[in-house]
Image 1: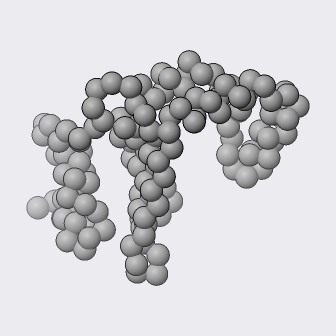
Image 2: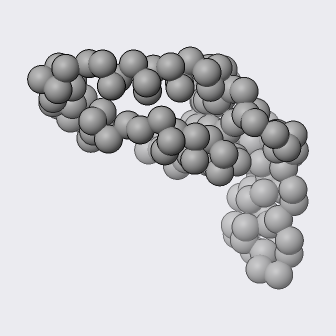
Length: 138
């Protein structure tokens, strides 16, 4: 058994990852094996954007689960068109100071729709082996 496979199975045994996550990781390191299909959202228009953060703090597992209606995101993007350019520039500067290099002037409703329509499950690596962030639509 190779080291990566053993590490994944050890994380599964320790409860650090779920069975589904272990399957995806194993499929990713074993070429030629098809990745298991994740139970994505039903076909149709997404209604929610979900952000799930699973972490371990002081040896205890924790979870943050945020479910935001897509309609709220759409409304926010449309309302951003009403915000004066000077305010957007100040907001961009403050976000950049905080390490979030995001340009609010580039938010467009049609781009949000395209993003949501193509968003399946994404696993984002962060700077901790004790945490995982998943973003998906449903």
